[in-house]
Amino acid sequence: EKTNEDNTVKEMLLFAGIVTLAAKERYLKIKEIFTVRYSLPEIDFIRDEIGKCFVNGSDHACILLTNMLLERYCKEVLIYKMSGFTFIKDLTSIESDFAPALKKYKNLSLEQTLQECKKEGIINEEELKLFLIYKDRFRDGFFHSDSSKVLKGQTGNFVTGTFSTGEMT
Image 1: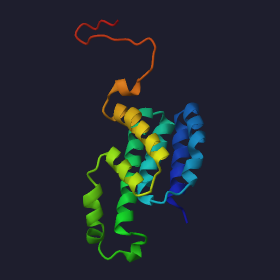
Image 2 (image 1 turned 90 degrees about the vertical axis):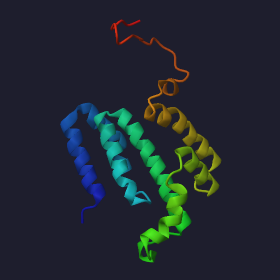
Image 3 (image 1 turned 135 degrees about the vertical axis):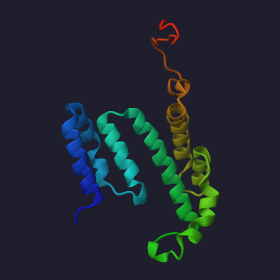
Image 4 (image 1 turned 90 degrees about the horizontal axis):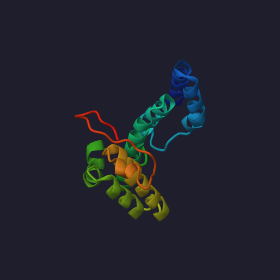
């Protein structure tokens, strides 16, 4: 029986084979990731899309989707933990079983979600610090188009200019 992973791997190979040698090289760097099952299969589609973007060289899309993956994964774990969910067969009503947890977690910011994950023992202090660095530098920088966060502490020759005259300095 074919699994979603089998189909994704074949699709990625076909995609990588069509694009470029660089895409093939990028695929080889991540191919093992697709053999690992997540504990929450409902987020595998995001992981698959991140992989396709990486193979295609769409780095900004990878960063944005990685934010989506992190936030969604953390919220799903918190919701499942609070609701006591373990097996689908144990659910009586999706709406009533998950309603309190959804109400508590669905509108939290990423930072609040990460803090809740630490409070619930899902992540430790070191992991929280790492995720907050990711959030501040990459997630917020790219997601909110704030180059000062992305380039924080970077030096180099940068070009500036004006749209009205086309002049570059």
